[in-house]
Image (cartoon, rainbow, N blue to C red; front, side):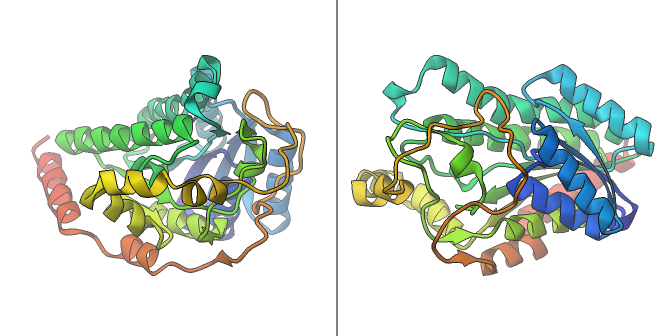
Length: 330
């Protein structure tokens, strides 16, 4: 069983804004020692200052997750500072909106290096530390786009599809070894974070999350729960059901619906032009914040998320049983 949150050391990448920042604050508020990583030094420092002023314990480690050496150094700092790592949360991500033919090879590569390889680097850095600690957890933040691709987001969707396969493979291999390391994959729907303002747009307009839109704190709550009670897969937002059903019941029908410009294109764009500023290649010098600027209703509750975070599926129980058997026969 995982340790109580108050007894854990948790590393969080992509902690400067959005989901990562909300998660870091929530974990620190429950007593965890937080190691916050991101490229934006100023935003990290303000996060740590906020946590400490509230009585929490946190350190900032500037890190570009696309660089494997920096991620290994992040793990070293965490262990040297707190003596161990109990949970590693892979959350850093970048995005670009546009038609495939308008997105360059270099832009595709950058998204894959951050969103996918950045989490691979995180796992490679975390596993030895978690084994030295006697076990722990890995939590990967993917997306509902891991289940169903969305047009005009090909690099992002592809990176998130890759994450789902990666964590499934990792989970199985650890179970084969009887390892006391859990793997949880979090699948957020459209979330009101600065990702949309920080992403690169080739649409001639500022990207926006398509409704229904959920609060970053809802994802943070799901991650916090998974730190203590790991689950195989945690969708965040009831709209995730549409992604599951659409892809599994009739992918071709879903293709047709998404080809309707009103649904798939206009729902992803504000009417105002893009400002030409993005964090794809380097961090923006901005103060860290959790919320984006979505002007519509932002939902704070999801029945699907509550059920997924609390109720283990039959398959999960079987996997856990196999893992325990392998642990006893190591």
